[in-house]
Structure formats: structure tokens, C-alpha cells
Image 1 (tube, rainbow, N blue to C red):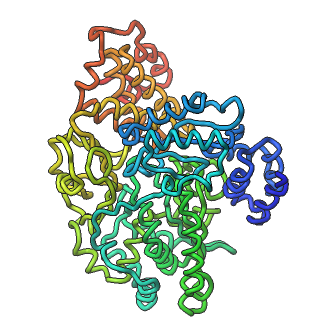
Image 2 (cartoon, rainbow, N blue to C red; image 1 turned 90 degrees about the vertical axis):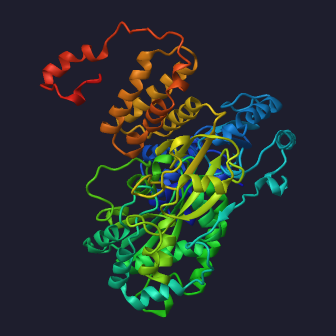
Image 3 (cartoon, rainbow, N blue to C red; image 1 turned 120 degrees about the vertical axis):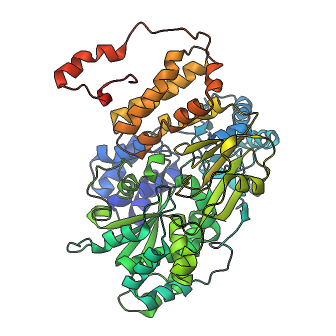
Length: 597
């Protein structure tokens, strides 16, 4: 097909709308393989934006390519759990079979092999993306067969279908997922209550956001509902399905098998706050779900559960679009996600104003997690009292937990809030003594084997829904080093503390791993953590030092045994060198120093 025809078709499909730039770039690249300079120029002309603005968006996201990536682009998940399952050796085996180096296009332009951050398959790795289609449970035999198919230039459609199979691995259900759901029943119940009563029902249920921060859902919705609208505006409902935290994959299961719960929860939110437009921001790694989700949306329109006159009521209009991301972890932050929805690089905004008053295109917008909308649906259906009776006083309801790592049965488990870590691990089948558990992914908390009695709830250990288990044979330093490189790769570069600090963290960890570290480096890591937590622009930077600080505190021998010299002292004192700057600015407070007091 003529490249110009491909570009023009994508532009026409999205009505030459610049706010849909991400989808235009994606659909073009899926056919042409990469985004050539002339492609960028044509798209910029088509949407009426400066070329530099379009190129900035294309350059920001990992899954857009401004250079050729060959007929086969193979990206191995670099999650620590995938590494534990042997992903690095398998990638090397593939490279040797294809005679190429990781990160470099083959001489004949056939294939490109490299790593990418977690792709949400921690329960069935090692996994990779092949031309952005997910492949799971890779083995040496599959790698050898795949190399042969690539050398023969076999189209993906002819590859074995079982290689692309993604399992739900839903191991335990509870109040949220344990009962069948009839589409429309929750929406009808919400309609019968009316928007104000429905909002009161959400408040009485004590629902808190399931993305990790735990902000009260009703308070967010109330602020959005109260925000004034300008002429031509509407309120907007956004479902954050950018499940980018390594170790988390429960939203994938919800979207695959419980999409009606999620979409109906979004529609109830729209009814409650008075919204007419909704988006699902689907992470690029879940591209394989797109067609099935589109089909579910279309079915709901035909059932009168979306579109104009929902449930046959005049004036109840709401519809949902799916926006596919392109490989940027920072877009999990709500304002960065909104920037991405508008076709721009996904960098977090300065706040205030908050999205509930000025979000998507300046309109009042709520952004909630996939699981939060599923909970909303059940609350509307069964009532606040039913929901509030589950869990603990400050953490009502149940929680979906993605369990991966050293367990016999990795997958998704639903438990009421307040369950102990030990109980979850027992159900998942711990195969050895537990050395550590990473809760909520790299940005979360590291528990030792002695802390398994702690409870998963906002009163004790908050969680976004991930438990990564490391038994006593694992090296917790290497776990933290993997996380350090993850943050260094995913920093958006907006602010200096995060852009530079995450890189220094990664390099210090590499230096220690190479046996060139010192006690000074071990002292430097907590200082960097404090600096990032106090000065970074957004949550990514604030939490980037967490896994290093926690493992250094709780598993210090894993660091110290790598030190060859314990008495090294640097000749250059950076804090002393900054004394003149402190004097000039009149600062002598704690934050102006780089040393511990």
C-alpha cells in the first residue's frame, strides 16, 4: 500500500484531530513499520500542528520509532520476575540465532531485538512483544522455532497460536468477581437512586481509589461535579488502564473477562457527575485486548447502555473511546495521562489546577483506576452497606492482588482488605523460605520474611495490587538494581532531580555490582533517595529511591558483600564545595545540605 494512502487513511479515521495524534501515529506505524521524517511531516500537515510538536510526541514514547525497526521488532520484558524465569538467557539465545546484537537492527534490516519494561505478564513469563503482539511462556525450544520463522520471513499470522495465548490465571474470587453480572442492572439501580443519592452511596461505601494512593472516590467525584462548566464543555470520565507498575497485572484480567463491570462503572460515574464523554487509557502493552474491548463497547451501544438516551432516558448521553498508550510508565500519573490523551508527550502537569476542575482539554475530569470502576458497579448494584461490611474500617471492600515470583501458582487473587501477606502467599504456594516481598511494585514497600504477618490495607501496608515474592535463593541487591534501571528508563526528564537522580542511582548500583563500590556509595544512596523524595516533580521521582532505600535498610549484607574496600574515602567533598552557594542564597537549612546531620 502507498505510504501516503496509509497516512491519509489514519488521518481521516481520526478526523484530522490533533488530540488523537497518538492513535494516528500508532495506526500509521502498525502498517509502515516506523515513522519516517516524511511521515511525520505529512501527519503534521494533516492535523494542522507544527511539525516539531508532532515529532516531540512521537519521540517521547518508547513504542514509536523514528528509525527503522525491521520486519520483526522483538522486545523482551525486563521485569525482575521475567529475569528470574530466564528472559535474559532466552533473549541472548535469540540474538545468537539471528546473528545480531541487542538494541541494534540486523544488517539485512530483518529484525530488532531488545528489552522493554514490564509488559504485564509476570504470571506467565518469560514474555515478550513481537511487533507489539504479546507472547508468553517462552522456552528455548520456542525461541529456536521463532528464529527459524523469522529467517523465513513468516508472517505473524502463521506463527503457532498458542504462543500468543494469555491466561487470566484468576486463582481466587471474592465479593467483586465471585458472582455473575448482568449488564445494565447496576446502571438501572443508579438511575433509580438519582445522581446525588448515588454519590452519597459511594461515600457511604467508603470506596477509596484502587490505584494505590487510596483517595476517597466520592470526594473526587464531588469536586468534579461541583466544578463549573464553560460554554461547550462537558465533564469527562477517564479509566486509567495504564497498568505500568512492574508486578501488577490484575487490570489486565478485569479488562479481559470483566469489561462490562468496568464500562458500567464508568457509565454510573458519568451519570453521577454529569459527564458525556469517557476514555479508557489502555497501556500499549495490552494492544491485544483492543479489538475485544471495542466489540464490548459496540454491544453495549446496541443494548442501549452507551450512546444517546441510555436506558431509554432522554438526556442521558455518554460514550467511551479507547485510547491506546505507547509505552510510557509515567502516563499512569493522572495529569500525564491527560496530556497523552490530548496528543502530547505524557509529562505530569503543574498542579493546581487539578484535573477535577481543569483536566482533559480544560474540562472537569475524573481519573479512576480500572478496579475502582468495577467496585463502583458492584456498589450501585448491591448497595453501600454490603460493600462497607467487607474489609476493615478504613479499607472497605476487597482487593485484587497480582502475585508473581517464587510461588507455585502465580496469578490474581481477590481477598477482603485486611488479609495478611502470609495468607496470600500460602494460597499462592510458596515453594521455599521467603526472603522478601515487594508490595505494589518498585514504587511500593519491601517486606522481609519476618514481616509476613502484616495486613494489606490502608491502616498497615497499602497496596496497588502487586506482590512480587523472592525466596531465600534470590539476590535482593539485584532486585533493587533492576528497579533502579526501571526508574532511570521511565523518568520523563521533566525535572532535574528525577532526570539526573534516577540515572545516578542506576550507575551507583552498577558500580557496586561491578565490585567498585565503597561505603561512601552506600551512604550516598539514602541521600539521593531523600533528595528525590523531597524535590522531584511527581510521584515517579518521589518513589524512585524507595526500593534501594528499603533493600539497603533491610538487606544491607547483600550490598556490603560486594564492597572490596570498606575504608575508601572520597577526596572530593561535594557538600563542602556547595558552601559558597549556600552562603550566597542565605540557606543553611537541612535540605540545603547533601550530608546526614
